[in-house]
Amino acid sequence: MQRRDYLKYIVEEIHSAVFATVDGEGRPVTCAIDIMDYDESGLYFLTAKGKNFYERLKANENIAFTAMKGEDTLSCVALSVQGRAKEIDGQVHWVQTVLFQMPPEVH
Image (cartoon, rainbow, N blue to C red; front, side):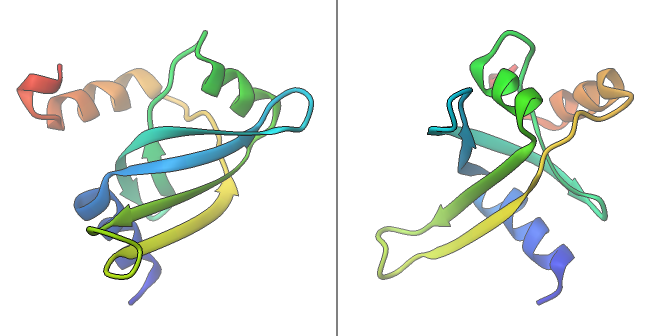
């Protein structure tokens, strides 16, 4: 599989992942996040100003996450990713596009 195939699988087949960041004192913090889209630049997820997750990302852009699909650890597919998060330019347009792609019951 190529990099793009993994990104597509994470978004389309798994969707939710447990993200790890660090707080202001360097302690690990995890939270479940939905991964909304992907392209050649990477994966896209949403957060909002005022959320603890957003504040942790602004203070330290390093993240890791594990996305898992299956019934249990012995019969599942799990992908772990490490990288840096960055706030994207033109975010209003992107958010509108993602919300448009989401099923109506999620809005």
